[in-house]
Image 1 (cartoon, one colour):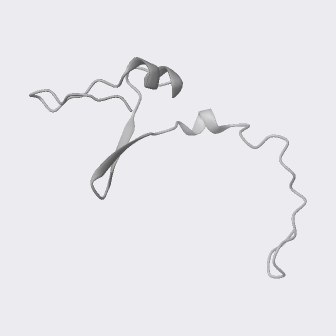
Image 2: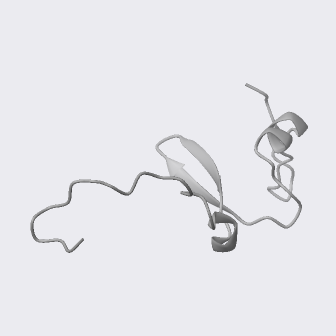
Image 3: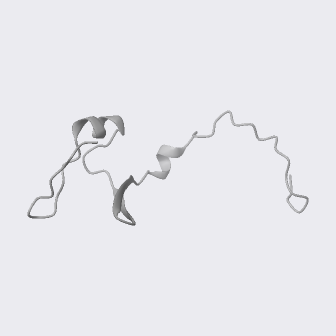
Length: 69
Protein backbone atom coordinates (compact mmCIF):
# COMPACT_ATOMS: atom_id res chain seq x y z
CA UNK A 1 0.00 0.00 0.00
CA UNK A 2 1.33 3.43 -0.98
CA UNK A 3 0.09 6.50 0.91
CA UNK A 4 -0.96 9.54 -1.14
CA UNK A 5 -1.83 13.13 -0.22
CA UNK A 6 -4.90 15.05 -1.33
CA UNK A 7 -3.91 18.56 -2.49
CA UNK A 8 -5.74 21.76 -1.57
CA UNK A 9 -7.51 21.43 -4.95
CA UNK A 10 -8.59 17.86 -4.03
CA UNK A 11 -6.19 16.33 -6.56
CA UNK A 12 -4.14 13.16 -6.08
CA UNK A 13 -1.12 11.70 -7.83
CA UNK A 14 -1.30 8.00 -8.67
CA UNK A 15 2.09 6.44 -7.84
CA UNK A 16 4.25 5.46 -10.83
CA UNK A 17 4.29 1.73 -10.04
CA UNK A 18 0.48 1.65 -9.99
CA UNK A 19 0.16 3.75 -13.20
CA UNK A 20 2.57 1.50 -15.04
CA UNK A 21 1.11 -1.73 -13.65
CA UNK A 22 -2.40 -0.75 -14.76
CA UNK A 23 -1.19 0.86 -18.02
CA UNK A 24 -2.82 4.19 -17.18
CA UNK A 25 -2.12 7.05 -19.58
CA UNK A 26 -2.62 10.83 -19.41
CA UNK A 27 -6.15 11.83 -20.39
CA UNK A 28 -7.57 8.37 -19.67
CA UNK A 29 -11.09 8.44 -18.24
CA UNK A 30 -11.78 6.76 -14.88
CA UNK A 31 -14.80 6.31 -12.64
CA UNK A 32 -14.68 6.88 -8.88
CA UNK A 33 -16.82 4.43 -6.95
CA UNK A 34 -17.53 4.82 -3.26
CA UNK A 35 -17.49 1.45 -1.47
CA UNK A 36 -18.37 2.10 2.15
CA UNK A 37 -15.37 3.92 3.59
CA UNK A 38 -13.13 3.33 0.55
CA UNK A 39 -12.89 4.81 -2.94
CA UNK A 40 -12.14 2.72 -6.02
CA UNK A 41 -10.72 4.19 -9.20
CA UNK A 42 -11.86 2.17 -12.22
CA UNK A 43 -10.51 2.92 -15.72
CA UNK A 44 -13.23 3.39 -18.35
CA UNK A 45 -12.24 1.20 -21.29
CA UNK A 46 -12.79 2.29 -24.87
CA UNK A 47 -15.10 -0.17 -26.65
CA UNK A 48 -12.67 -0.33 -29.58
CA UNK A 49 -9.96 -1.66 -27.27
CA UNK A 50 -12.18 -4.62 -26.36
CA UNK A 51 -12.28 -5.95 -29.94
CA UNK A 52 -10.93 -9.48 -30.09
CA UNK A 53 -11.02 -9.85 -26.32
CA UNK A 54 -12.76 -13.21 -26.53
CA UNK A 55 -10.95 -14.54 -29.61
CA UNK A 56 -10.58 -18.29 -29.36
CA UNK A 57 -13.30 -18.62 -26.74
CA UNK A 58 -15.21 -21.91 -26.83
CA UNK A 59 -18.69 -21.03 -28.07
CA UNK A 60 -20.01 -24.60 -27.86
CA UNK A 61 -22.02 -24.10 -24.71
CA UNK A 62 -25.26 -25.66 -23.59
CA UNK A 63 -28.02 -23.08 -23.91
CA UNK A 64 -31.38 -22.87 -22.23
CA UNK A 65 -34.19 -24.50 -24.21
CA UNK A 66 -35.81 -21.13 -24.97
CA UNK A 67 -32.64 -19.75 -26.67
CA UNK A 68 -31.83 -20.11 -30.36
CA UNK A 69 -28.53 -21.60 -31.43
